[in-house]
Image (tube, rainbow, N blue to C red; front, side, top):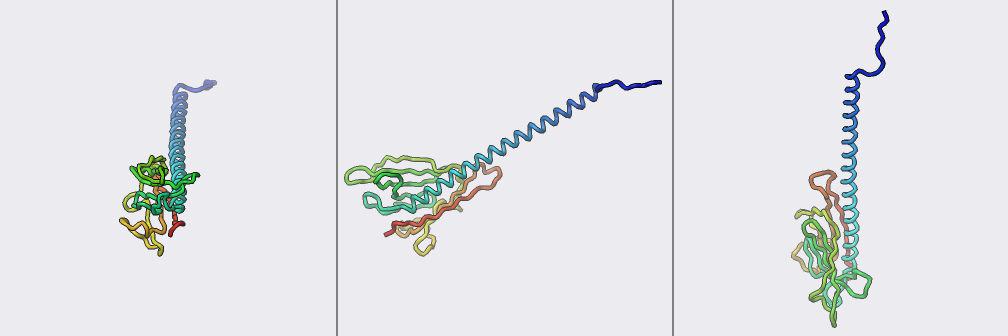
Length: 196
């Protein structure tokens, strides 16, 4: 007696192969989606950190080069934990601009104002405002600006602006506080060059 098995798959075997292929395809598709989400978040986080780094460098330059205003105003007008107002050569023209850095609702802004009139004055200036950094998560425990005197002792607001010798800038960036990676902290120091 010759019993031969027919060639090919049975219906059950074909269904098992199709099911396994579908499960593997869904798993691979899920991994690809997860990879792109993770990569997208990482790229977005890296971009935010790079923009913030450039902003800290710009703030350090502005503070370091703080000088008397064209109207004779002192280098720094006001100084707080989340804002600083000073006079600095912020662009390539001959005028000294009033420069303000302000942290508001997680965004760090830089505003500049040109002097006008004769004699030059900063009354009723027109401000040009740019965004320095977003996703800033500094809290009350980590001030954006800290101030130090000539002996490198920290001084606290309200303070006499003429006692400021250097400024520490700390910027904490976190594009999603509910996800990893942990917040990224950027720090910069600016020593005022044009002190009397």
